[in-house]
Amino acid sequence: MKIHNFNAGPSVLPKKVVEKSAKSIISFNESGISLLEISHRSLDFIEIIEKTASLVKRITNLNDDYTILFLQGGATLQFAMVPYNLMNKEAAYLDTGIWAHNAVKEAENFGKVKILFSGKDKNYTYIPENYHIPDKVDYFHCTSNNTIVGTQMKSFPITYVPIVCDMSSDIFSRKLNFRKFSLIYASAQKNVSSSGMTIVIIKKEILEKIKRNIPSYLDYRIHIKNNGILNTPNVFSIYTSMLTLEWIERKGGLSILEEENEYKAKLLYDEIDNNELFENRIHKNNRSNMNVSFFLKKKSLEKEFNKMWIKENIVGLDGHRLLGGYRASIYNAIPIESILFLIEIMKEFEKRFA
Image (cartoon, one colour):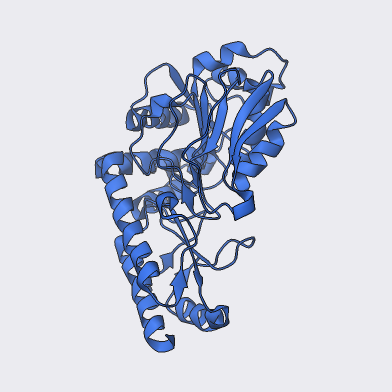
């Protein structure tokens, strides 16, 4: 039975990655020992974590000015770790979605937050193009893709201020100049791996300005000093990340994925725009290629549409609990066949009820 998985996260991973990860739980590298049982200090795991970090750098074209950490606590912990480590007095934030708003609230515990833009009054349906980043702030924070509402930054500002970006839901989905960023963080359960691990990419020079005492686990410098193994990391998720990054390289890298993702998103948005029964409420220039939100123009038809897609083995199409409607999360590993299948369901629904 074919399942079409549109969950927002944890979400679909490449089939071969899932299969190899599953085999490793029984016997890692045919050793007779489960991946879940190997020591995080063993040579086997040291090789995994070093290779995974190397793959991140290679795929993003970053040099040794950057270090890669695999931490726990999700992006939510990074909302606090970023200002704890980087904010001396004031930082600038874009409030472009619910998770971005949560990042602002955490940062306010550590200093003054200058909100350059908030889309809250318009339900976060667009992202601004023109905003000024003050020269004297410690850093500028943005969220590249807003999972809940379905908006995405298509470009990033040119500034001398360090840029910090939450890329949880679109990291490794497109080609970017990653050297524009001083710190990137991304929870893994969307485009990279299973839940429970967060990739943190840090330009080491930005840590030289820290003036406060920071508890060890919350201090990036301590993690770097301990080669990313301050405590027992999420061994399974890091291993699965390594397999996914290898899959990305085999596909041809981020340029190929970007082409595929733009094509998949266009197909789905075109159907929403042309279908008499559905609508997307996001400004067209800001539509996400990862999370496509849409609504029925007649809410009374929701029960019938829900019965239809559930019957056809589609999962994860419900919109976020705070937004309602529908959301198709179409990450890297979502096959084009699933997009086309959903479109056929929508077309058939239009024939029956328009």
